[in-house]
Length: 298
Ligand SMILES: CC(C)(COP(=O)(O)OP(=O)(O)OC[C@H]1O[C@@H](n2cnc3c(N)ncnc32)[C@H](O)[C@@H]1OP(=O)(O)O)[C@@H](O)C(=O)NCCC(=O)NCCS
Image (tube, rainbow, N blue to C red; front, side):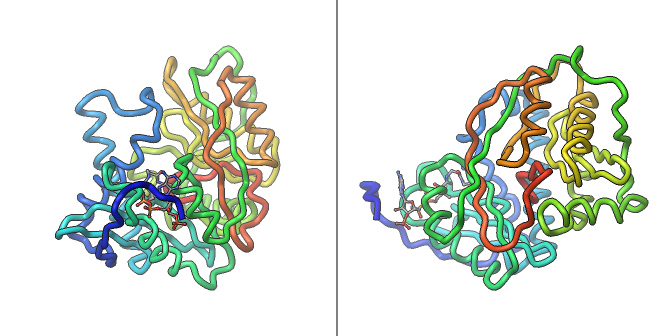
C-alpha cells in the first residue's frame, strides 16, 4: 500500500440519487479539470455554464440508463466523490471516477470504484479510459485490467491539408440506426445507440459514412469514431476536423494500438502527439479498432 501521508477517511458509499446530480457533476468536473490542459478548459462564464449543464446532463443520463451503476461518496452529508459505470450490450464501462480535490489519496476513490466495478461483475467485457493520475492507474491495474497504452493529439488544424472528396455526411439516429449499431459492435463489441441522444442533446454532431462507420464531433474534435476499416475511419475523422470552426483548437484522445489511421490523420492535419492516459480492458471488448472511444460513454 502506498503511504500518502494522509489519514484514511470513512466515506459513506451509496447509490447516486436524482437530488445528487448537481453535486456529483460538480465533484466530477472539479476532479477532472485538474487533468485537462488549460486551453481546453472553458474561459468565459457562458462556456463554463455550458460545461456545467453538459456535466449534469451526463450524470442524469447515466442515472436514467444505469441506476445500479452510479455511486457517490458522502462525508458529513456532502457528496465528495462520484463513480459512474454503464453497461451497453454486456460491456461495462467507467464513465467517470472523481474525488473532490483536497480529499484525494485518502481512501475515498477505492471503495467508490469497487461499487462501480461490482455493476460490471460477470459482464462480457469492461473498458476504462484512464487519466494519468497514478492513483487511478494503480486502482485499475490492481482491479485486474490490462493496459492498452494510448496517445493523444491536439492543436489547431491546418485546413489546407483537408483532403478533397470526403464522403462522410450528417447522420440520422433513426435512419442510420443499423449502421450505428453495427459499427460500434464491430469496434468495441457493443452499440452506442443508447447514448446517442445524449451526445446530440449536448450539441455534438453525428456524421456517417455509408457502409463504413460513424463519428461524433464536438466543435471539430472527434469525440467518438467507430468504423469497419481504417480508410473509412480516416474519412470520418477528417470530416469531423473539417466540420469544426476555422481557427479552433481540437483534441483527439485515447488513440490506442491498431489505430494508426488516426495518428496519420492527426499528423497530416498538423496536430501534435503526446502521451495519453492508458485504456484499461478486461474480457471481450472487440478489437478496439478502428475506434476512438468517447470519454463519457466509451
Ligand atoms: C483517481 C481518484 C478517483 C482516486 O481516488 P482517491 O480517493 O484519491 O484514491 P484512494 O485514496 O482511494 O487511493 C486509490 C489507490 O491509490 C493509492 N494512492 C494513494 N495516493 C497515491 C499517490 N500519491 N500515488 C500513487 N498511488 C496512490 C492508494 O494507496 C490506493 O491504492 P490501494 O487501494 O492499492 O492501496 C482521485 O484521485 C481523483 O479524483 N483523481 C483526479 C481525477 C481522475 O483522474 N479520475 C480518474 C479518471 S479515469
